[in-house]
Length: 449
Ligand code: PHE
Image (cartoon, rainbow, N blue to C red; front, side):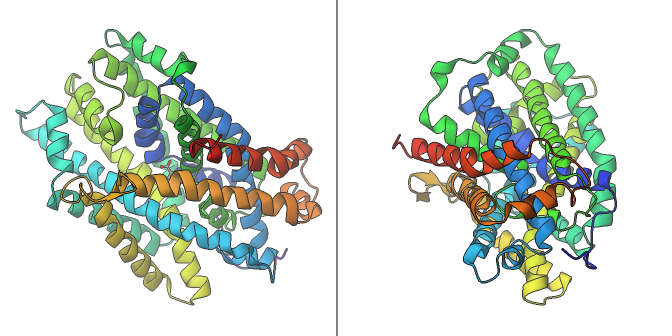
């Protein structure tokens, strides 16, 4: 396939950092811990890891292959690779997921902004209220502040996209991701030093299989997709910016392992502290916003660390949300011939409007139910547990059954210049294992199996 004049990431390390930037985000530090808490701990983690290894990594690699070979937005790549065939519907399905995920991503990232503000405040003012649950509840169920924060977050996302992804993102991520890592390690150490922390470790690493219910499978699979940013065209879009000499299997493994590792670290930072304070692991979406302030509250220099942590969480969220928005922006640029700024403004406004509903679903709109779930929960469930695995299913079916094997092999091996010994295993997985596993998890999740 021709090397055209599309923009691309600057270096191999840049590709790694940008894709890790997309993968590592609220999914690792906010969503993974609370799902682990709600789904029984270690047994959930085990199933999650199996989902990542068996389904996540192969699909991640498939998206990179499709993106780099197809050289276009996540809709155009399918038109390029399979002209006259309707596979581009995968791209369209992805757009729905992008908007839904951006909407609730903005909600949570908005909370992060409020916590940055609270941390700054407590640096200067001796705070009275140390009931962190009450602080959180007052804030996130109110009307004005969470919406303002969510809008602020979307503006930040849009600004970065306006200035173009490569320089800003690559360079920002190179500096900020290592700092995020260091802060997480410090928090882990602190958390492990608290009394009774061993209980938290047991919860994380000692599986109790009686905790496995049907929904655990669906949640673990959804989380694997969400955390790796797959199933909505993000990695396809980034793949189209990857140069021809990049080793795609290596990138896929490294990024996925980094992503898993950061999620586990977040678990180690949170659960020992949580058990030490005698709090419930099934706190839900508020987990990080209640437990960590509690830990910081007990630390020397806690406000400072709290500030640092929430800034980094915001940055992690930003490097993910831009990868979401870029999917739609690139589509509008290439297909509707829009200018980057117009595409950015249109898509950011769309996502913000949707986001207001998800944000308010904790407060004024909390009684609005869709199939028995709040707007926030239904958005999360629909996109993460249904749309993402569904797109993933069609991606592997497309590559495994319809796209010429020779082309896949050429793309993976960079036209025979590198070796990929696991190719037969990869093919077997995308042809059989991944699609069957996804169907199994779906049927189980729906209570049919
Ligand atoms: N992977 C990101 C996270 O874990 C979320 C995300 C999902 C980003 C989908 C891009 C696309 O926070």
